[in-house]
Length: 352
Image 1: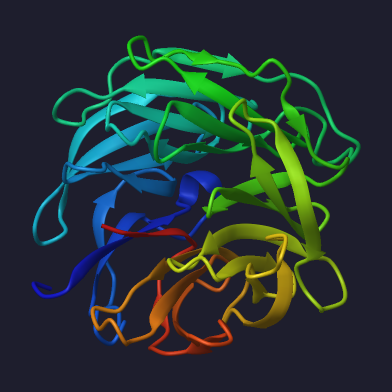
Image 2: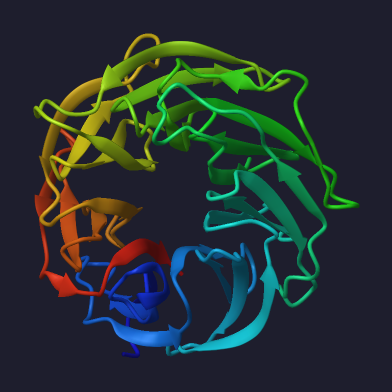
């Protein structure tokens, strides 16, 4: 396992009713896109989401437990992981985390308790004691999913000091301002509320715009963001042509910004949207089977060949599979492009 790029895979373990054992590692051939058979890199409870330090060989995992935690791991050249430190998040069931662009702070969304936490990172990338914990309050109209706040994503802007927090339970996007000297979050004067019952889950960026998935109403919505974090809707679309229940999960945008992708649990498809519309609103272009059951997460990765295709790697949570797809450069539609890999309850895929 000495050639190719490292790819890490998070999972749900027995602590969360899953069949995984921790964080897995694979090697990716950047020319063909093929992944090697995954092996266990670190046994740790329910590392459901992963993030990489922007400069250091350090991996972070959200331990999605009742008493939530974040862990930091040193990445060896062979993909082995060595624990650097663990910190409690102060919230329940953290499901997403990210590192600020300057590498100084780790922000985490605590889904179960509806809060966002901040941990400072030292010069080695090790998280220190929590610097801030912002608790959301309220509810939404979908009684069984929005009985209270459920922060589902915390994502710093690639430049500046803004941190977007997406709260599924409140139908709200919070444009926090992070103080880099203290690690504290200043909430926006007026958080942005989506349409009632949207259940916003994740967002992706393209050309200064934000695209947000609605887990509860099966939508994708495009927005422009003002300097103060105010959002203006560009347009929205349903995320599948299939009948029956649909639950949006991951959203991602290709490097060229032409296409956005949304994983649809229920119909088990990957939907494609063109972003080359006059307004920038997402326009449904088609969908393809995810190759398994309950596609929770995916990652888009390039080919080493400038003329080669981009690849899409899908973690199908309930079928215990990771599937490789090639992305058509013209239509954007995914086509199967590699072997089916077995991983217990995969929840996240990260190129290291």
